[in-house]
Amino acid sequence: MRGPAFALTPRSVNRVRIAAILGVLGPGLVSGFADNDAGGITTYSVAGAKFGYDLLWVLLISQIVLFFTQEVGARLGLATGQGLAGLVRERYGVRWASFMITAMLIANLGSIVAEFAGCGAAVTLLGLQSWLGALIAAVVVVVLLTRGSFKWVQYIFVVVGIAVSIAYFVSALLAHPDWGRAASSLVIPRLATSPAYWVAVVATVGTTITPWGQAFIQSYVADKRLGPEDLVGERIDVGFGALLTNVIALFIVVACAAAVFSAGRQIDTNSPDAVQSIAGALTPLAGSGATVLFAVGLLAASFLGLGVVPLTSAYAACEAFGWETGVDWRLREAPAFYGLMIFFVVFAALFILIVPASSLIQVMLTAQIVNCLLLPFVLVFVMRLASDKQLMGPLVSGRKLQAIGWAGTALLVVLSLTLLATSVMGI
Image (cartoon, rainbow, N blue to C red; front, side, top):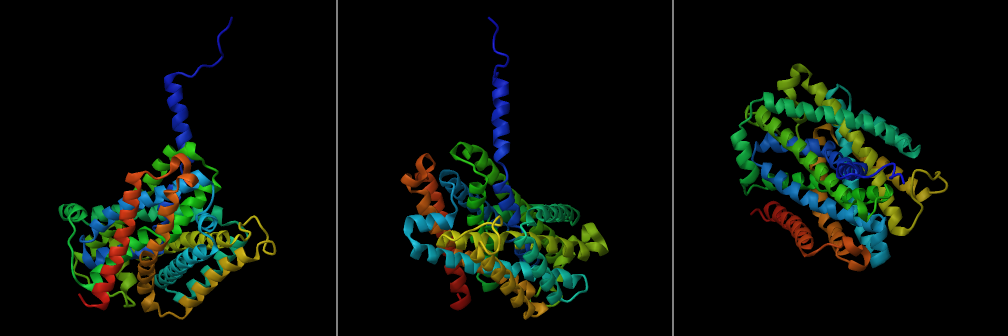
């Protein structure tokens, strides 16, 4: 009797496992890379330009918290196949879903405003008026999103974003930074009492760990139809995504610290020359072309964010109230979905049209602060859902994961209170 035509050897079994893991990669990487949008690039640049290497410790803490919050979001998607807003409505009712979605949408609207501010700041570097950049961006984004064709265009912006990230990496090396100071600042916090310092800390955390990011990772996992059997691959995916976010951020901070801060240049975020000064961090690589390189990178990052955040916001709002969602629907079939998406884009664009060009950097920083202040309200629901054994089954958070998750949430609350104390009470 003939044996089987094919038998799995230990080596082939390992290959199958690796292929299965690679097949689920994507949500964490996309979410991680999308965190480095216009607000992210600008916040990290200002952190390095104004405070040198002193805020690198924030990136290490953000790396840890980002991994665990994104891992929880991914697990929720794997276990339930649903988005965050829909789950909150299902488990806690419309009232609590409305509360959570309101906090999320306020933060998201700030992020969308920041993306348009990024567009405006980028075109000013190219010699155009900021309002023109916001207007063109609004038209392009609305057309692409309502026609459901942004998915293909965003790959172009991802490629450009990767190229600019590599440019920061090279610039950081060519600027000959103080690597010893950078390494020590990464693990030993150098705290200050000035409000400006804590504003930068909160903004850095807020641009790394975002309310929209929590909704995005869960919806992406659910849309990809991943299940509990994909947990190992998705944890690897989330780990790479979180690492990617913070490695890019680290080199942006180091490049700006070496090329701007160490050179003694002063950065006034309300100055018309602020964007030009930040672009100077790419001078070691691009020379006189640093301004154009930074402008193109900032514009690509802005468009990438504009393709993700309005869409995520519309999905979350419609899930919370049980309305039709998705770009596969026609406008008349899902009026609430398209109406909300267009509202977010148009409102943010109009806001930027009336903001002076000199305030664009400050607008982007403020949006990241709002993210950090509102994120705990979203994470409370995430942590409670993840510890619900009836909902999560075998993917429920154990005691260690619960402790880490609640500790991260508490840390964000402490940061918010610290910012309040230093800014309002003058401590």
